Image (cartoon, rainbow, N blue to C red; front, top):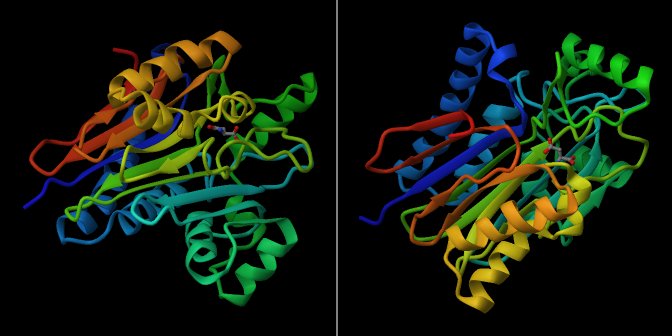
Length: 310
Ligand code: ASP
């Protein structure tokens, strides 16, 4: 039997041990573990990587600790507007949504765009009309309300800064979630989901729903899901750049990640990280910020969970 593998992230940023309580750390680790198990259960049963990515991300979207689905950050206007995308490495099929509201699991809506529409990327009102047509699960505004996120918006409004997800006692964190998976058939998939950035202006779109920037998968190279300051990730076309370095320059996954995350992004001031998996099951979890919530699991190994550097 071929090996399967899965990796997830719950956001990167200035995650400081000094402001982390033991209870909070345990809750984050449990959230990551639950998501890995949700994805692994599908892979172990011989299911496909796209379904595993969706299951892991749904678990993180349902967890208010992470900035996606329930727990999404607030826009400047005090709304929760979410973005998501996913891609299948075998077919290069992809689906994405941006600026959607009241959708319980934006990643599943992105998957529906891929599988049930003739399009790849749907935005705002049109995406909402599509969601209604396919009976996507909707939730009222108060489902998405998380007091801590609302307080973050009030703080951000005071200084008129656009905050990259939570800012808790100087803790700056991007809480976007993502998953990459390799199934036993040897197929890769990647997905990413987010509420974006606290105090983001009306119409702002980050890297998360952009195929090639925040998400990319190709069986010939790798599967990538990013988290960080979206504007920089868009300008660097991060996910596709890693794939290109592998495809055109013959670099390994590790070498390609190193160049993009630690050199190219750093050079333009792009803070964040990503999870990466190649078709051989190699996993890389690089970031240039203080920390990144991350976890991974291969068929024969224990679950790895990390938060801080090192
Ligand atoms: N990349 C996301 C965005 O810019 C933010 C994040 O990763 O938390 O919308």
